[in-house]
Length: 158
Image 1 (cartoon, rainbow, N blue to C red):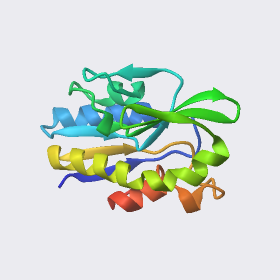
Image 2: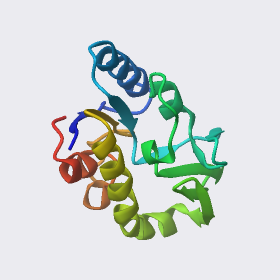
Image 3: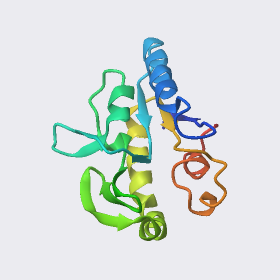
């Protein structure tokens, strides 16, 4: 079972992705088998894996030379308008959802998130988990699957 650590910021665009990439590279240079993980990512552009599955580009950049896997980013949200996104789970489109619909649905994705995390955890020594946005968004706290909620699920220090 891998050791997990969480990278969390105070808001979007503070450097979490870059810091996660740096930590992955440092741990790799130190001889550890390391993988990035972001349970839920929102990005308009994506990366297509060798298997033809879709995932966030940031996790590909963070992967530090290992083959990108949708396990590194099990949920990808691709905005379609101001109030909705295409929802991609384990690299495959499950449909378009309005934000309110997705917030009601996302707790059902915890088993997918944990299966992806546990797969990586069985293959790597260290998993560097990247949060999203801010953990201080108390309106999202009860249904959080990417920030402190993910840290709790992974038993990871933040």
